[in-house]
Length: 250
Image (cartoon, rainbow, N blue to C red; front, side, top):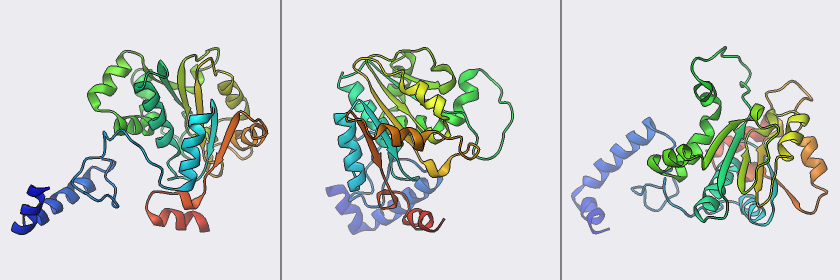
């Protein structure tokens, strides 16, 4: 703090701040938030995650209290990030033995054709949001080590059938791009001492009309006492304020 005060007095702080703003513009997703008290602070490896809205607080509480949580809401409400953060928290605390992240490989309205490389390389573009969320909670070295040991697994939905996921924290992302049959299959993978979080926005499916099974599944499971269905809305959006304004008129 003394160094920061000295920089303010000498004018060096303004120059440093300008350079940091340039870096953040070139490399978004570093964990910096415009409402942070200290903009010099790197937020990527801060372990404690706090809710920024009532909806997020209810979602975090539901994850702590239920083995199956359905998190539905528009883009920018922090569904995926909170689910991954809770998964990492549980793994680091020794509450579960592994993290399994799954996401459908569906393009957003356009086909990019066949991709070269092994399975992991083909799936990398689809699973990028999950890697980003993990990288925001773990250092690159720690993330690489956990994946090499099999403690963090990123799997396509196509390869989940027939598995029983015991002692695991499972996050199913972009579930609005899953059919009813796929979601039923995924939900029945839940094993002993496991938690499953299913996230998605029913209003933004990339499937043909009426093919997405997320809304129907959530409506049916909401009647079960041991299943939490959390519905977030525009007031829970933590991205640019314009995102909430646009979603209110689109």
